[in-house]
Image (cartoon, rainbow, N blue to C red):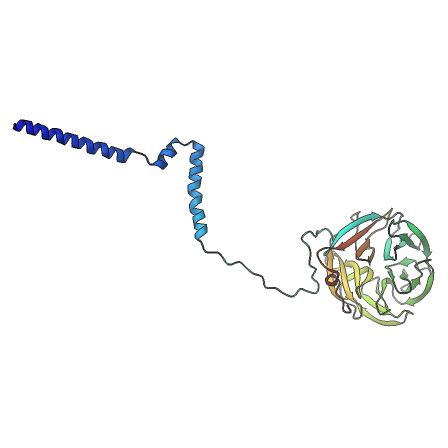
Length: 342
């Protein structure tokens, strides 16, 4: 009886140990659902899971991080020489302008020395140094075809320059060369190209224009002096040009002089300068990066004028030279050409 009791106890103990052992094996060996899925996953899936485990903490950190303060710019008053540019403005052109049209003239030009546009016509000043002859050419602005020409030479002077239309006609400088250090300022009938009147000045004048007050202003060939005369040629004032720029042609725009030329410092670069016509001092500057089609000249070296919202450039002569038309780009005329009177 005692032996039977011991046997029962031993069997019971064995069953209990077996149950405990099986339970422990289930707890230790059975994989978690995540591990089970991972063990059945492909290598690509495993890489994706690993990447997900790395990215998630970063995203969580980003979502819980504090936002950083953004830098703010303090608005300042624009410089008088600044030009607001559109994002599309090209560095190969002129600050504040974009090229609208490039058209060949329907005639040849020896050397372009001046340009004017008015009443549907363009006027080109051409110079032939070999023949010592100046040529004034009128063409239709719509077709660039010649209307008429006039050879100009007075007292051995033939070097025409930058022209501009005035109230009575076209003002044209005729400069001497060699020992002749003077000039003749001509007023020419724009319809027939006849000389209406003229006056003499004691400097070689490169370009002229008429102000809103009826004065004739000019800049000399050396680029170091401005002049102002009345309509009969009486000198009103002369002012040193402190811009270190040799201007080739000028135009009146909103009561200010817009002067096209090239600086003398640092190897030279092309500019459009805005000059106040009374004090003859610069109030704005616009850099130019564009050259002629041949690449030999800045577009501001030659003829220039402004007409009906268009900035016109004739940078060089040759067979059927290109007339370049620029328009404002990302700015306004009031900002681009500051005016003391408007």
